[in-house]
Length: 213
Image (cartoon, rainbow, N blue to C red; front, side):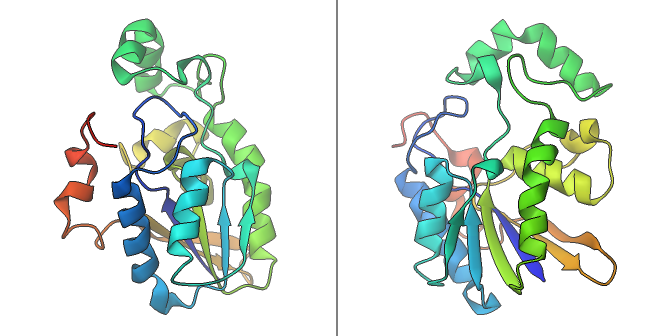
């Protein structure tokens, strides 16, 4: 079984983990992702219940037309007290926490929020559900924190070390995971693949401006 983990498209707000719609660029990213995977014979689609993930899944699914199952357990890691804040405000208000987090000495929960182990605990049953579903090619639209923590779990890394897996994933990048039933394990085949976006520099994270809708 092949699983294609897709980070949601660009959202319409840069505030931390707010539940908002995709931007115009986000819909474009989702369409390009749908086209990229159209030949993979996707036979099921899962997503978190956050708006940006649902809309990404729906847009890509225009190319696949497969069942779409929504699982709240695939939500982004909870950033707790940081949610709704700007990056600049977070850097000031949580300066000491960010310094401690950067040392990666332990799996710190975000103040008032989750740690990586919390995400793995709630999301892993969904991946086990997918593994036993009988589907062969499954797209999973979720979030950067979930993809990084789950890849760490699949690779038997310590939860605190998930931050070694990409500083930031591109929106609508693809991370491919394979479930080997006979070996009872997941393998990671590719990570943060955004080749389908590279011809459109305006769709990459480096181009995202505060004025975009």
